[in-house]
Length: 372
Image (tube, rainbow, N blue to C red):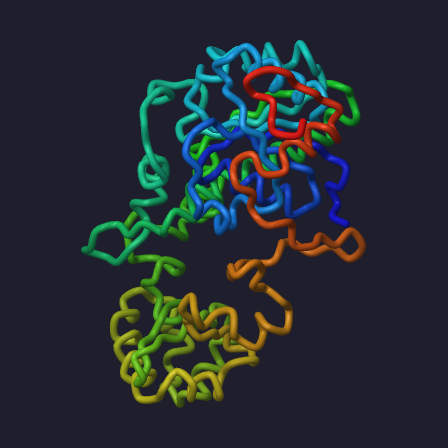
C-alpha cells in the first residue's frame, strides 16, 4: 500500500506533464479520478503509461450538469490537477475561487509552460520552448554544433510534472496541518530553471564556462563522456574523482602525466582522441567484462529494447510488462509503505460510475454515466 493511500485527486485530462504528475501520485497510492471530455475514444489510451492508476468519468464541463458534478467531486477531493492555459478553468466556473468555495482545504495544482503570469503566460509552447528561455537548452550539445534537445525529459517531466507532483505533496502536508488549501503555479520554465541551480552555482564558483562543450559535465572532459566500441555500441565513463581516474590510468595503461594533466582543458582534445582509439578497439561486451561492477564509474549505453534486460534492472524489477505494455515500476521505493504497480490506464469513462458512487455522488442529467 503506497504512502499516499487514502488521498483523493481530481485530474482534468491533459497531455504530457499533467498526466505525468498524476502517474507519480497514483504510483504512490493516491486515488485519481480523471475527468475526460466527451468525444471520440482513442483506443491507444489503454497503452498510455502516464495514465495508469486512474478511473475516468466523462463530463461536459460547459454544461451546468457537468460543472456541478465536477464541483461535487472537488468538494470531496484532497487535490486537483489541471493543465489548461491561464483563465480557462475560471471561464468554466472551476477556477481556484470556485473550487475553494466548495472545499477550502483543496490543493489546486496548475500545470503550464510559462506560468499563470508574465508576458508569455497566454502564448502556446512546448517543452523545447520552455527550456530554451532558461539557458538549459543552449547549454546542451557539442562545441560548434547546434543545441541538442534532451527529448522532453528536462522540461515536461523534470521541470514540469515532477515539480507539480512535489508541489501537490507539499500542499497536502500544509493542508493537513492548517486545514487550508493552496494554489500551485507549476510552470515548466520555472521548474527547469530550478533544475539548473547546480550549474549556476558552478558558474559562480568559477567552475563553469558559458560555452557549450567546454565543461566537465557537458561532454567536453574526456573522463566524462561516451565512447564508441568496435561493435558499434557505446559505453559511458565518469571517473571524476582521482581514485576512480586512477583505475582508468592503470587499466588502460595511460601515461603517468595524465594524473596531473586531466583537469587542464588544453589537454582534453588529445586525451579524448586517445581514449576514442582505445575504446573502439574492443566490443561493448568486452569493456563490460573489464569495467562493469567496479569503481571506474562505467555503464554500457543501452537502447530501449536492451535496458529492461540488463541484469541490474532485472534484479531490481525496474521494468515490468503489464497488460502487454512494457513500463517502469513505481519509483522511489519505500521500506514499509511500498507502492505497487497501479491499475492499467482507463478508456474515457471507464470505472467512472463506480468511482462516483464510491465518492457518494449521484449525478442526474446529460452527464450521468451508465449505471450511476
